[in-house]
Image (tube, rainbow, N blue to C red; front, side):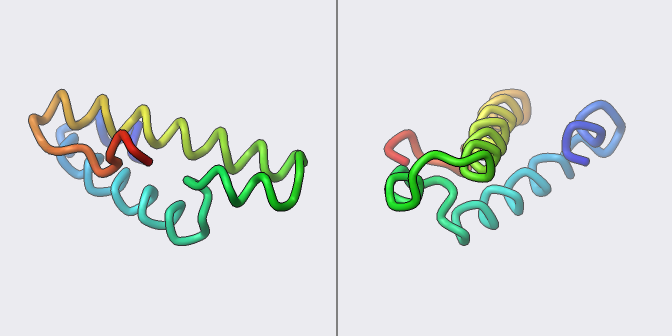
Length: 76
């Protein structure tokens, strides 16, 4: 949805949508390497990791375009 919004006149709403997605990922611990190390490699863990990095990239791109701060700090 955020990617669709970024191409429409509601492009500012995409920054909010990405932020909500990032907060949900942080809530379930998908941003932490420790959460993957406990369970070992699996398809589900790989999907969580890919979604995290996709949202992280979208966040950085939208922050640069809109001139807003990134939701994810580089330390995470």
